[in-house]
Image 1 (cartoon, helix red, strand yellow):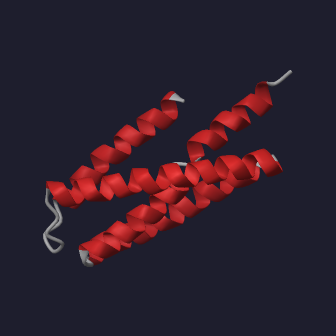
Image 2 (cartoon, helix red, strand yellow):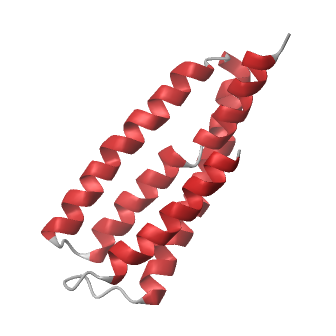
Image 3 (tube, one colour):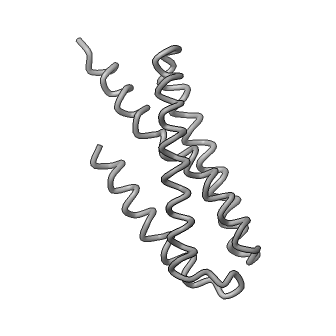
Length: 119
């Protein structure tokens, strides 16, 4: 659990650094906060849906792998968007997609750890 908490703290620090130094997008502290808020809001909603899917299917490892791989691919897209200096609404859409895939890792890990350590 501490690993996930550290991941969110590091992600928040990097978001502020990456978006705060962009020259072409014009993102200030309000824009960065909006991106972070959308990331968390849509991520929490998707975490509820992933929890429901986990309860029905019990496919912990499959859903964990899916969340990690899709998050990685979307982060690559985000880096390309940052390098190409696309408008800020593209960055916001990609950040929402990362939130949808990254935040549900927490309930999947908790459920998977409970399944592994169950006697």
